[in-house]
Length: 356
Image (cartoon, rainbow, N blue to C red):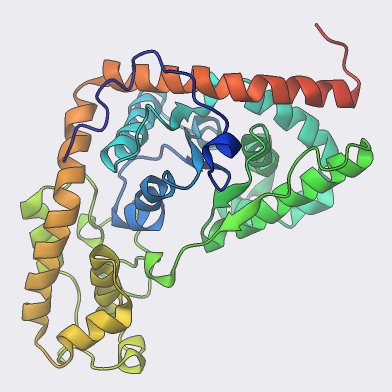
């Protein structure tokens, strides 16, 4: 894999606005620094981030402020922030042309979030399902930040007037809230079209990756079994071992999509193969129909090692050079602030705040 970070921390030349470069729009997407990035994170988000950079101006943010809505070990948070940045780079995002940064280095996010806290309605927040899921039964003990963080998420997007956001099914509700906040701000302050109604970018069905030990459960870093997931930093031997031990059933490979759907473990592995091979799942089903699982797993192992091995190796290299990763984040934050500051200044003017 080429060194995608070479020169990334060097002074960045002026880059014309996305409109002048014939790009489709501006993307903002963020990933929480929770550690242990796995195959699901890669196929569902990070790989797509690299692919979008040819058509959009991209800002990719490590959302460390969202992370502290629940208790964090500060030392782990710092290293996990670098891990996400390293994954962005290892996946092929060009930090010289796009912007990679961490949220806490750009205070405009928090400043706009307070304005949005005063625009959003309590009833809107009460409908946010992720708060209910994360807070659990003891909601009175949850942090105010966990309750209000959808307003910060809206600020993450709109402080750059992002036109598009890549979202999974679990984030669609938050993007709808972002659109509601933008529209209400524009209406309340008689500023038509000041904030855009950001559009979602939703990727194909093959992006939902399930556990290697249970095809009915989503692949997760919190699963106690490391064999339930392929971590992005796993080496070839670990990848091979995990695929070899992945749960299957006693029947030959499915020969139709309908058959695969009835067999979640087989369906999951076929979906992973199709996603890594950049093909439709139906094509993968046709390729392996009626064959033994051992044959299929051998092919899946070879493909996974070829696709993920270089990413993991580059991540490992970058994690051994935290100073370089930090310089990429600082450079990105400076460029992000250059975009955010004038938008915040205009927002403050519209609201009626005096200019400092």
